[in-house]
Length: 315
Image 1: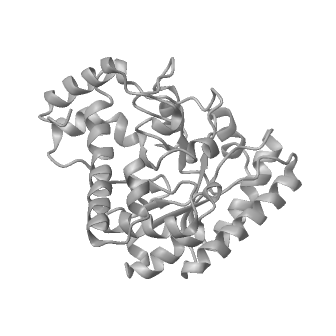
Image 2: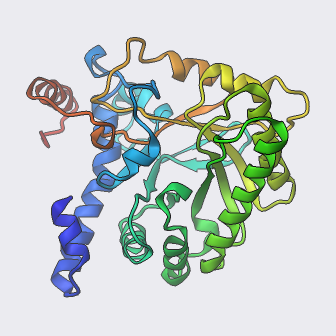
């Protein structure tokens, strides 16, 4: 990513071509590596914990990330054996089609977000997570506008951070403000609706979470967003929404810090608990670097053995 950072600053055609090639390789490596390295060996189980001092903001400050759904990861072994080409999308519980590989913007200025978004689009990404924490939704939106790619061919997710207030009314008000901020930022690129909006963190208690969600539901009722999702929610925090009869629109995705190099004691617990609730788990750092995960020599060797069993010689 040092090379990527350097190439971003260059204006010549050779640098642009090299940067495009790197990002294309990254796009395919995310899907391929997760398919071949996950769900096959117990030692490569994923991390479902949001603890350990890891926050999305801190992770975003590290090199560029790509998000991948754990539904794809959990069935990787079967898919790799059953088909030459893995599935590239899935259907969420609300019936919407969700591309499995998502490009997540990190913390950099709008100009960099603009350039990287255009590169990602050229590489084939169609699912984008533009978090409010990254601070560059305007640059992203302007790139989408200038790309010329029809809006209906893209899946765009924004986010709201409103977990620092307590109580139903305060949480609702803070979340409403965050929703409006998203629409204003994306409006810089003439994006007038979102495919998904994500609640980055749960409030401190059930009442606060319900206040947050009521604002999301209001946004959905206004038809400016199609699907609602959460991030860093435990099963109990999901239940604060799902068991509230006032909430008629349910979360369809829960983004969690999963990584092939970051291991919890019970790796499948959150995936299973979310699935019971009709919620798809999405990894927001599947290759592990922004979580602090590292691929040791032993882990690389295990990855190589799994890849070789499926005809992959990358490692």
